[in-house]
Length: 72
Image 1: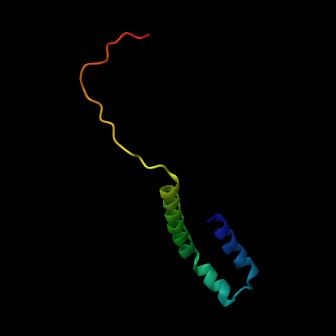
Image 2: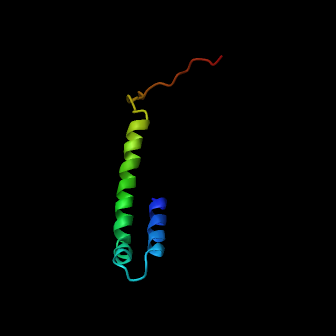
Image 3: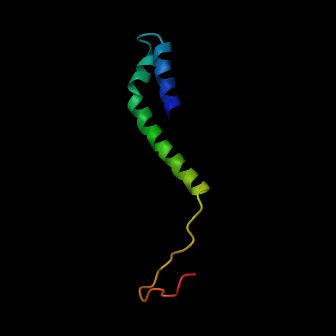
């Protein structure tokens, strides 16, 4: 995302003042930020799904008498 924003601002500096490309680039910053945030969220969720180990069960501790065996 940071690289895309850097390229966006570099493109604004490289294009001549008043050109159609620069005008389109200047008006598309909000679109770049919103789409970049959505793509980043999707990418993080996809990587989490692929790389994290899923939980395999649930432990339900029973309420009742505590363990009173002597410690060794």
